[in-house]
Length: 169
Image (cartoon, rainbow, N blue to C red; front, side, top):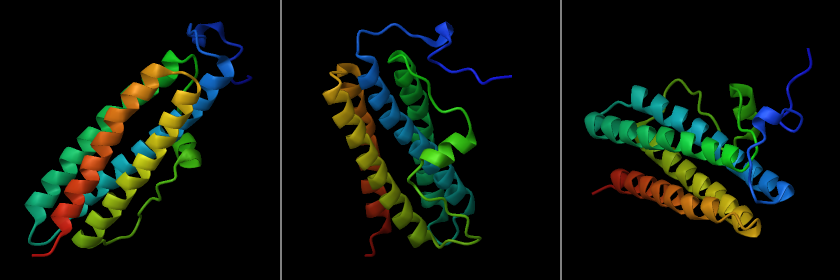
């Protein structure tokens, strides 16, 4: 059985007035950001589950709140890909091929290292969102260009909170 390809399957052809090649570029950027969101979500939950030490409760709750915020944006990103007439991620393998945020499989990570790594990863996600913004503006995709600003602001806020939580004194 041959795999279904969006281009040949009329059921997946969403109407759009945007140029097909331009929307593919935007969709590729969105799917890369989506892969990073899933990678960051899972890493944030991993650290949430495994944080320890005197600030356990504060860090545990902070990471849980941040993970929920990251997960909430994933559906909006995927739906934006579909609104442009393209297809989105289909599997964990698809995520792993596209993600730039590196997994952390270490058995133990200290709380300070957790906060620093999540801060840096959120800043990487900001970079991905800026790539989406650039692609969207070039494609004249105003809706994507507008909505990505909110996602960028959220990631910047998460990085800020992680930075402040990690300060000494």
